[in-house]
Length: 325
Image 1 (cartoon, one colour):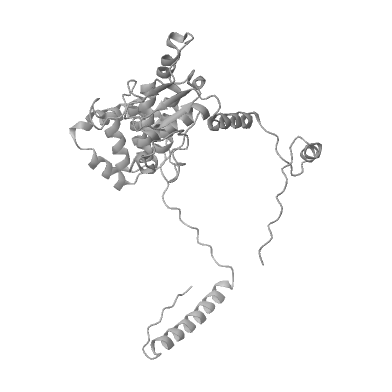
Image 2 (cartoon, rainbow, N blue to C red; image 1 turned 90 degrees about the vertical axis):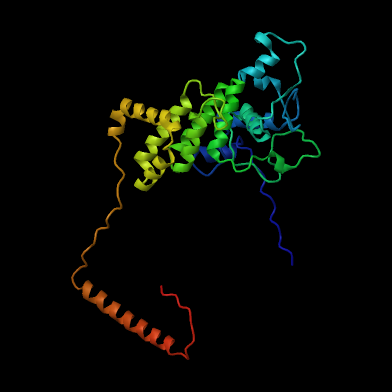
């Protein structure tokens, strides 16, 4: 007999009198939409609808992201200037831009999301649809070609920051910086922090340097991360591991910045509470008479357990598994 599927409960408009009365009298009721929810729903609709998309971001792999050109206004200055030079109306605006190879499709997908939602995440790349906002991909391409292999989260945010620099996209710069801050001031391994040092302190134009960081905000962030990890999270072994990783002369500028920040912020660092060691549990003294009863009970259990073990070891020499709770 097939299970009977219950009928779907019809969705009730929260504006009905019944719902409003339930809400007024503090009964369970449907929520009225907030201003934030209304705005979020509209952003989601714009991001998903094909209506009115008049401009395309085309990657070097031929993957297209068609968007509404109006979303570029007040966003990436480089793209806005290409559409509206000097802020003047453009009677024949371009319909696409061919992005250079380092604009990887996964990064562009996150930029498109940020254009509409004001945020991006890197945890919703599925195997079947790694580029949820792409509108066209060549028939010969495979989903694996869209992925950036072995790219940890902190490096992904650094690449987003680098593209934001190139696009002159201040809001995206701030978002990527904030996401990096959230990562590096929680729990971060010495090896991962070294990767950030390499990517931000290496000479401009080198293979390991990712961002220009003309104002030095990323370098300051990495130095702050080091001081935070040392004060709040790392054990002595982790601190020694990090120092061992950073022995080369090329890291002198990094250590110098850490030294300067320590000197400039002695008041803050001095007020940081020291990490607490393992707490000692208080041993409660048993009440009168309880201790003797507990001891007698323990002796009784021990005798029973000894008898059981003796029985098992003399049971024809067989091996047996036993779990003692």
